[in-house]
Image (tube, rainbow, N blue to C red; front, side, top):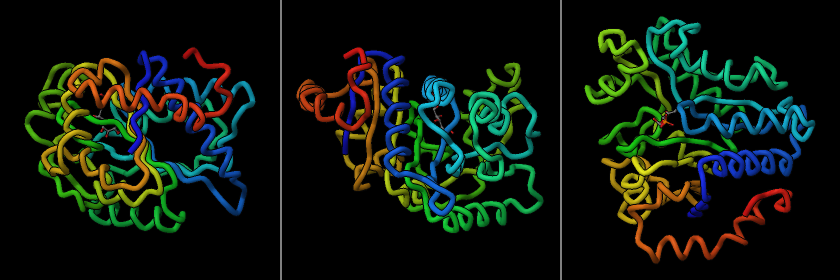
Length: 274
Ligand code: F6R
């Protein structure tokens, strides 16, 4: 596992966007070979999306031969609702880049048969040749996508009923009215993300420091679903200083000592503020 510790949240955005850009460029996608990427929503990746848009507008990258699969979506929330993940992805990323809408895949939480929708999603990932790079974010309880504590680490895309804690935490996005918060969501499973060739997880803020500690310094445990990625051969976690507050000093020192090696993973390091 790699842990890239950046000084600030802004730098996490810049570093991760550069990494994504480099991965896509090195892959040399074309009409017969698409780069398939898994994407998260939430506050954490917003800066990365902004940077990727900047790179696109500067002519540094194209998304013409990129296929995307989003991690999750609420059930029974219209696509144009400002809290739907369709709305989020379109308004924070897709409308600014050259991706073909046909290559965008977001679970349909309004599908008549939700189980079938989840099965189809897994099938579409398989038909696309699997996910090359799955990007994720985590909650303070270590959840990835809607795989809350106790979710099976072998889980696949499915319907999840949200825990009371999640409903309460999400009420702020729905006018502080818990009754307006969708009670269910469709989500990829931990196993779905594990199948990707590479997993990149963004973690920022002191409120996620304990989750980062559980993710990397303790054992694999379904109560901290993010810990599953210790067993993935290619996991890269990009975090800020605040997220490292619960780690041992020697862990932080070790990963910081690899900074120069990590920087070789991204293009054009001369432009970075190190
Ligand atoms: C995103 C997702 C979640 C979020 C997590 C963190 O599609 O499924 O795992 O990444 O809840 O959210 P933020 O970034 O808002 O703290």
